[in-house]
Length: 182
Image (cartoon, rainbow, N blue to C red; front, side, top):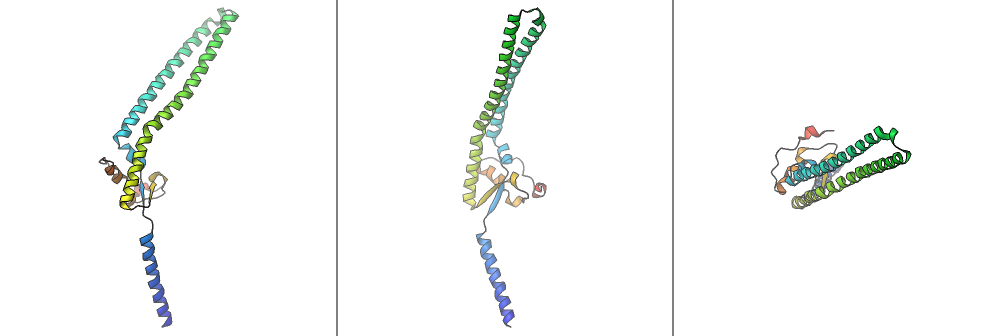
């Protein structure tokens, strides 16, 4: 009888403890940031603006490459008939143009990265602000990014809820949990 009472008390204690733990366990959800961002009109506009900016840089780079190529071809065809001083002067000019081209390429990459950060930072900040507000409202303790998860369930995905909180009607549903196994 003592053993039965002991086991019964142990079962009751385990039930109470697990119930208390379940009530105090953290509430965790996840968000697919790329999915949310992809449906925001501001993100689409930022992508278009960045594409146009990069096209301008690419066009300027092609123009400089063409200029260098034409000058090199002109030099190459005239090199035998030029005096030593004229040939040396043109070689210096070609070297200078080549250096300018390399510098322009590097500067273009930096400008493109800066422009991307400038355009996208406010968008991702608004997503973060919405996630924080939603989390406080729903008493969520942790929100993880979907791309860092090994496995997820659709019930824990708040991506569509965040879109609605931001005033955007989701155009498609997020992928089902079965598709998210990695």
